[in-house]
Figure 1 (cartoon, rainbow, N blue to C red):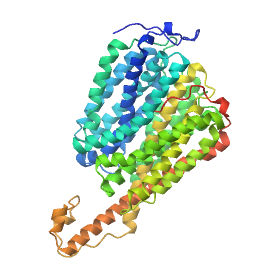
Figure 2 (figure 1 turned 90 degrees about the vertical axis):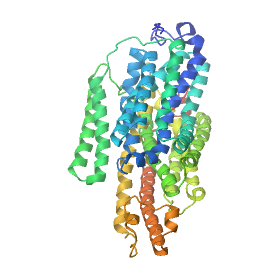
Figure 3 (figure 1 turned 135 degrees about the vertical axis):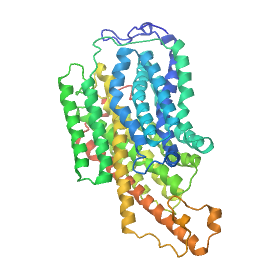
Figure 4 (figure 1 turned 120 degrees about the vertical axis):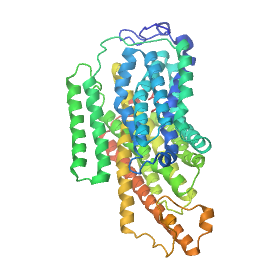
Length: 534
């Protein structure tokens, strides 16, 4: 392993190619970093497609299945800033390799999980190592490409991986779930990680940042406790109600911990998050917006997978294909937004984007048990994707506006952290909304009355007869089974529709924030643009 620890980002001089130990192999380094980024991005969508099968296999309840997504996003978002600091001071190559190895181990634990808790724990552990891996990969990229033109090309590749990786995850997750096993949606990370580590050892040289290497452990603990308490409080609302002591206690406890985090950051000499980064009207609007986007994107659209597979009966592969329009239109609109933001500024796009995204989500609330994908799902996904694409590019750029060089890493990490944190909070919130709406439907709508003489196994929970078995039953029994199936699916659809509606409401909140807070013009945006989201 190379021990060259030259700092390629000294504050007293601009970095040059001669200062950079990775310059000669920079394009190989880009391939390695792109592979790591692909692994992190894949893991979000690939698991979503596998979740219905995993839920059945491990007996996970509807109210608890959200922890497969939430545990990863929460750990990733809460620890991302600390991961960036560790990578800079401990060594970017070392952090990259440890992050990759840990991510592979966590994936193995999840792939071989025998119950829900093992899977949840593995997903949280994946988030912990992703929080080290992702900023280490980005730091290697940033310090390797020192020329403005070459760096722009490298960031373009990095951003393309970020956008396209989600689509690849949808297809790969569907293929693995349908033709191999849902567990391989996690186990597939192992060979990728082993290959990445093997090529990193001889190719990438170590770099570190100089200066004070103290870590803000109290700040890390406070923000993790605060966010975790908020998420758990949202889940308690589904079980005990919003006014229950459990719900209020955890939510208030989370808010108190976050307030203490802010106070701690003001007083520490080496804050996890320099408060000057979010305490700026343009950047503040962008960061709040990215949190709401994370909630809608990771939380709200989780139920699309369940609707396609459970209600419409899509196979995992077709569910992946059916989800692709959103990713496709995000990429198309992002390309357009990158061009328009330099001509008309960020504000118009940040107003149009949320409106389109909210309209797309509202169109998804029209879904039913017997509605068509092309008339009720595709239009909503397309418009939602267009809106997100128009919004995310100027929003990411705005999050870096006016940031000093020594805070640029923290600002970039904060954008990605807010996306993940928003996803964790949104998933918990929408799960509560989904379960409540589903319960309300069954309470307000009587279930079909079974005919006399119906076999007991037909009435038993989870014993839905196959098509062959159904054909052998008397006609009244067949009618009852079909009616019960429609009734249960209607309850599911009611829950999904309410989740989509609340996601639309959250993303629409971005508009008044932009109107009140955003003052940036087209000439104020960073020249290099923002890097892709994790």
